[in-house]
Length: 550
Image (cartoon, rainbow, N blue to C red):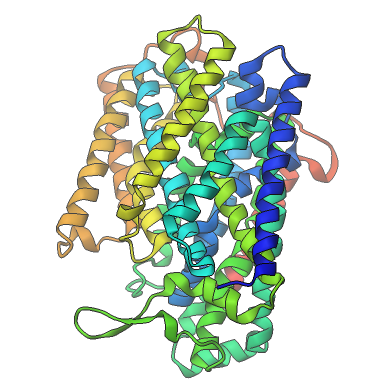
């Protein structure tokens, strides 16, 4: 339980974010009344690269990452840091190839792009998948992680605390629109990074530095915990080749084809801001390994050396074997390693993660409900009615997300549970977007069949995996499963494209890159801010980091 000082700090932070969100959203819309729907859903296309980069990071990083990456650091070391660093490569793809493409096409949503490139059926299917994934992945899992932490710290029901925070987040998101989301996410990103840095320093200081940690790992025969690229047969089930084959399937969907993420790019002021924003986020994505994952590894070595009491996390399973409930390791570190007052800042950081994730997802759901569903059946609807429909859809999505918490809480690891679901959703969408953007012959019929059959295949494999846990399928790591499903979808769409040849419309004829050089023809800004220069620097930096922690 935390003290009253920390509680006051946390409450003031939540109320402050609510006030800022309402003020920024309402003020922006009053100043720009010409296109109410555009202002609400896409911030009137006024976003600059710093806001885009910070908002991308905040929408991606949630309480799930703070809690579950520390848990993974405790359990498997730096391994899951691959998800953070590999993201930089897909953000480069977003900046170089996808962002300028979306800006050029003038779409308001990614399902809108699929209709222009393929057909209406593809758009409808992506709307359904995108809304479901936003509810499960971006909202429900964040609520679960936040609820676990808040229950431990405040001693209140997980559902009570999560509902209260979610309602507050929904108020400024629903009223203020994307502008409110981006402004509050920028603030929350700074708070979140600061809070995570504090706990990282506290753990580092308590351990006595890097070398004492290495000595403990050497003594306990767990030196593999500081390696991010594991050999074949590693007990984690995620060897190096699974990372490089499986992650791009997940990453391209998440960073380049998921409405919740890409909506920040769609609101960019121009193409240069749309490109530099993701690259800025790519540089920020270097931090999570050191401020989210590493603290968990420090917690493991602190526990092994007796400097951290984890007895409260120990329990006994049905067979009588003692196990550690490592989901609570981050909360334990906060209460044992930090003084009062500072704990309040960390709680604010945790709330930042929860609120930013929920607000971003609610805004994207509202956008798709308005543009992709309601406007289809009532094309002459007014902007005012469109915004109202989006607000109602956001409220319904929030309620549905809360109902999923008991089911998702069954996963032993929140982070692995999250990525396990993504691995079965992403392959057909990644395939359809990649071929749609880069291959002229990708046909509408092939995209529709690939989305339908590929999604059904992913659902069947997921169900078989859960029902028959002892089968050979269940033993395939989710990263490799994502790669296998992607290959099946790729073969499927290419085959269907030749069986049902493409018949381009006047609109779709210009919605693919004629060559890999075409999207790079824009010279961009001069100097260090040039998107090509930044991409090369980020590539080299990531290569060096992977070499150091190989």
